[in-house]
Length: 477
Image (cartoon, rainbow, N blue to C red; front, side):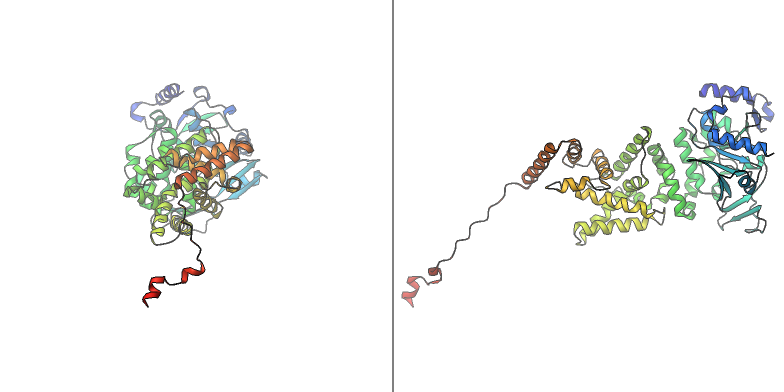
């Protein structure tokens, strides 16, 4: 499909002379592109038509158009319009106004949400931080980061304030044409991620754009254009100013969407990973490892398995992703606390608490996720104990399956467990009789591993005469 797409781009750009090759928008008529209403969410089309019928301009924008043009299945369908959020909300009884930083409308159709935003203009740097005009509400931090952006404008202004060129593509429901305002079609054809405007200024406005550049490069298999990439390492520290709750969500998009391995490598390459997982990154940089774990291999194996699950249409829990990204540091701290004289279990609990407390300063972790993480870590020390009724009890644990998958990642990355993963797989698949045999086998192996038992010498019982003095001594007295 990319070959035919490149032909489309050449045809569109031929409308202009070389001198005016950067003149936009490029408008691609319905007859010259493959995007059809049948490729779109029916609910998104309903929203577009109702806005049009009410007298408003309405377009699909961004990712759904980009993904279709490169032969990916669009997942999200975002609508942009010249109607204000309040006007959109009044049109749809199944909608709600959300957001303070960016006022939006979510129109709900069962489980599907169509996000509708109003055309926005870019706030000038010297604009006052606060204004009483509710239709033009903007604020920036001392670092130049946009805190609120509710200045409404027209479609040209809206395109200029979007992050990357391929996200400034608009589908017009009135004539089914595609409008390209910033050269997104050419950048898709060239397979590159290019930011709109001055990269340094755009990253200063929203440092998360650096993470988005990485995510798109990994997801689409594109290169980051040179000027877009150049400031990232230098400006990576600006992520420290992003709320931890927002970065938590970004991590899930980055590493839990099926392109985790390449995303992780790019995050490390551009110096961004350290601002998401500072303690893990510190361990990786120090090259710390021990016989039961190589942190780099372990994390990569976890991401390989996660990518595979997603490719198979399975889900992955956020707590599992965070559990294997933080596990190497938990082991490091566990070792430290045991060296201080703490028993193994209390040392593990202390290590988990310290690692989680430090991590939430970078990315928040809701309690509904941190508790399962602790349980997975704790079960790594309980899974080897399979004797008597313990195997049955462990199998019924709410986190058993996650802990078992976690164990497999450890083994696949080099941990020698004595075929523990294989044993647990067999136990899950076995009949009751086979289960008892497996437990007996594990119990026998445990005894063999300890070596032959040493018998204590029998204590000779004392007789009444044992306390008597030897006769010779008596005679000599």
